[in-house]
Length: 232
Image (cartoon, rainbow, N blue to C red; front, side, top):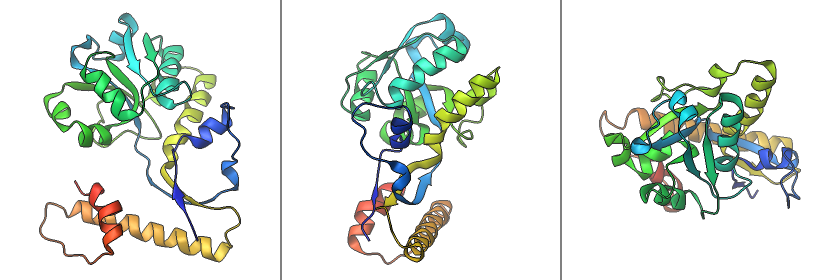
């Protein structure tokens, strides 16, 4: 059985009627998701913004890849609910380009990036507090960001809560894996079981990373292509 991973916002794009969408995500045979890490709106430390209250007073340029992605969607959503003044600048070719634009001070922030990505891609920014997380969007707070508010805590009406619940659904399936439509139930159950055992094993490895030496035997392509990038 062939299976693949996708942009976790694909169902979000379909549900919001993005132009050019011809797929039906509900027809896929979904296997599992690697994480449910919250998306984080983060800004440069020298932007003048350290809190949501600051963002209500100061306009901040937020980089985005295109008009249809969560980097472009989340800042206006936050503006509409919290009265912030984020302004989206689109056209960057991927997350790396957005980060480079932040480094060059073309824009001052990113409206949708997991904190774990900042820790991997710009660890010195995190260590030096050059990039500041000011708001989370997701099902639960990042373990490292318990002091940073999550949008669910700040809504004031049932309508706002429904909107935020919908926006947070893409976080529930971050880094998803799926097989084609029509996979026999027994085979799909076996794939899901194998996926769960693999991710649980990786979590155990992560917990023991600083507690000694762990020897493992793996297929080379899996070790280099999947496991090694996730061992930090």
